[in-house]
Image (tube, rainbow, N blue to C red; front, side, top):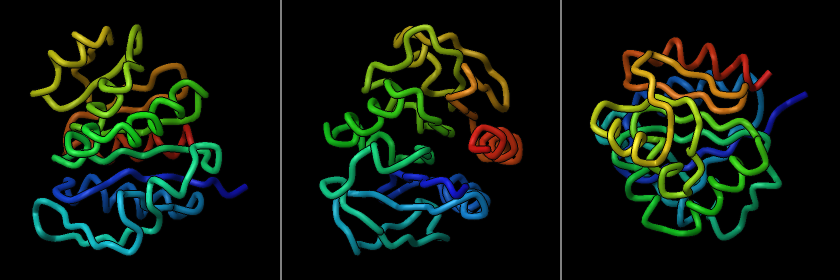
Length: 170
């Protein structure tokens, strides 16, 4: 069964944290890139990756998707300022659907107030934020919580992140 995977991204995402997982996820299902504006091109902060947006956040519902992926970089911090993306991410957490977040990706989940009591990791600079959100922080390359939430810290963790994400996606 092909999974429908939503990817929340905007400019200044971490190139490798987007490109490598998305390539792997395309083998498991249909990947839909979501931002504010359908058809817009967004660029990674390293300048290596450009992505054309498939759908506007206004035209999708979490109910259409099986999995949520949030790449790192500055993108999650930008997106969490927009309540539409916060609500979208929170809906996945509330529905116990798989959520995959790497590096700064958990920032969106912090703003969604969805991390209380959850096991998690993330980029070093957001460790205090994760703890303040009530999460149980683990400084490991990949953390899987309740067979639903997969998180990693940084680009070096991508192989472990992809492996556990694919396992959770099924």
